Image 1 (cartoon, rainbow, N blue to C red):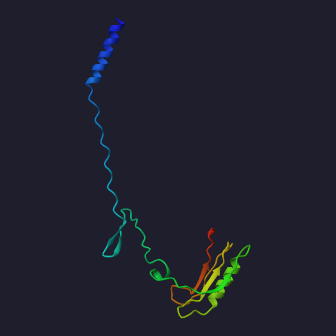
Image 2: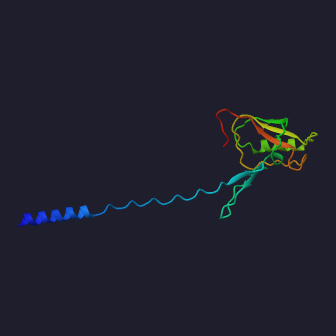
Image 3: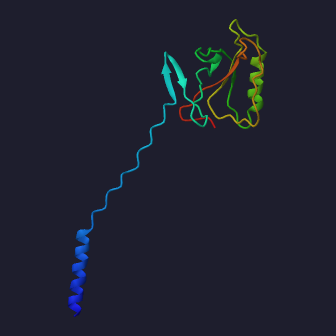
Length: 153
């Protein structure tokens, strides 16, 4: 009797499996449409799109010296500041103040302070206070010599 029940159960199970339709494959969700480009070009001008939430790519095309598009002038070195151990704030500020006190040339440039290769510890703020030449410039600049393996920190 036990054998007949087991065979009937197996036959019923096999019959049910044969009658079951294979499950249909669910379609993957549709990919969302790509966002529109943030910047496009029209007649030689860049057009910046604004997203629904108001975000927009900033236009930095006029950033830089004199609003961009103008080469930075090569200010002549007027003071060289050698590297020294300890806090260099006062040394560098004195050099900047000296250059700021000079008369600007015909282009409005007073000159540059050159920091030689090395690390300069500055514990406070450095200020370039000269006001001469074009309204956007001070006529004074700071410049540093590059060291192949040394970065700014």
